[in-house]
Length: 221
Image (cartoon, rainbow, N blue to C red; front, side, top):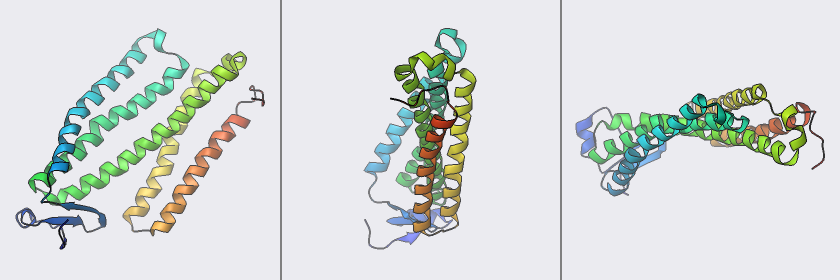
């Protein structure tokens, strides 16, 4: 890493002569323009993985929506998670690959920070969505295995769809405030506190649904 780092400007020509640069609003994003192996490798991998990820998950969504034998309760949640992965392949991966290519060729460096920030926020959003979706899957599998006699009563299509919608809403509630706080320069300590509150709130919400909204399940193991 070069000793001298200069924040990027809108001048592409002057940026191309620098050995390193960082984002003025977020010094954590720092790149060494002399070392191109890692961003080149990352860009190539993402350019290959992005269309494969997009197509495969699109096929999953289409198959579940078109074939009735696949429209089981568990597949409702899996379809939602496939949509999340599809968005990662169609949006986030290409954005990161584009940023890597701009770094390798030292072109339009003024756009790299925007691409990195937006792709990071989107990846965080998609990660939370997958996390909440896995909670719904865990609940549905728990009822199917341990409380199989109550499965038809407790696990219904409308209930699962509602839980999927709640998972997406919970994702926005979790990620958007964190992204806004980071953009306006809120102290890291307060952002960490918000993260703890979000995780604790997610766990409590899941337990509340388990205890109060599913009275048909006995409280034993």
